[in-house]
Image (tube, rainbow, N blue to C red; front, top):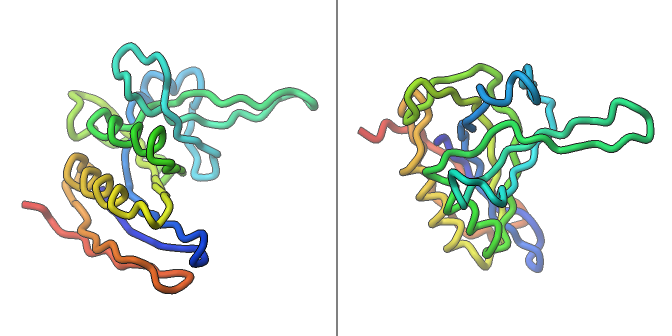
Length: 179
């Protein structure tokens, strides 16, 4: 996962976030009905999926579908899931730690999944955000993402997460081959 880190906010509302490139899976299932062609302008949300029979900690990626008729209702349709090797930690991050997760399409091409036989992924830019006083939780999640998930070229990013003393700090990321 390619990762970058940022801390923003005032001293009272300081938040820490990091961004990782993560492929979402299951697009091949949803492409015929709910998302024929991913676009970088699509509006996505990342939410825990209740009652998933395959993974009780499933994290769904949903796309906003605007109402076709004026006065109609916009709907969120599931278009895939974040990888199972990350889902449990992300589920707890959202449900119990007060973290938020946002996503946008990073690359519209389908890529071979590093773990699923013949599986496909579409890369998302996923931003994880939490209150700065919970930096230790963020560091654990960030470390897990870095070590449990690799994009198809097996590049992993190393990140130094630091506390922000100013209103906005951006921490640089160096890509390295973990081998």
